[in-house]
Image (cartoon, rainbow, N blue to C red; front, side, top):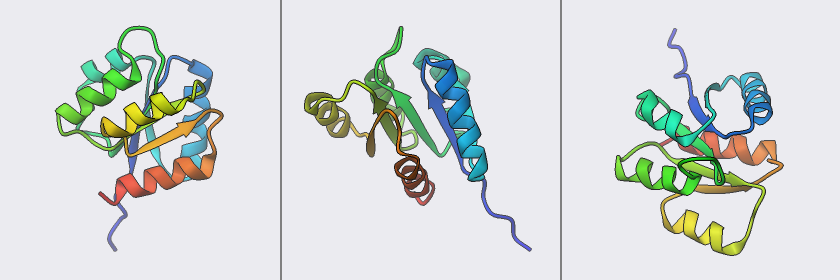
Length: 123
């Protein structure tokens, strides 16, 4: 019997409560998550090519989510979804033109998040 490939997502946000909540939510869907409290922590972790996708907040201390997106794209990394509670058309346009495959508004719609992960896992 073949086992299904485990999908792993990197969640990058400076909100510890959100990180833990998303990890718990995704666990119920059978998605493994690795959490990072900053873009810098993710980038130095060595996990860039060990995850199927990245979910990153826009505004964080240090490297922003948009700068993280640029770094991931530059390194031919996995698909990135940008999330933010500060939504505006300009930020969304920058994210999508820079290579984000999805843009989610906080509070996150869990179905939109699962759809992003499913799409990313198929890549």
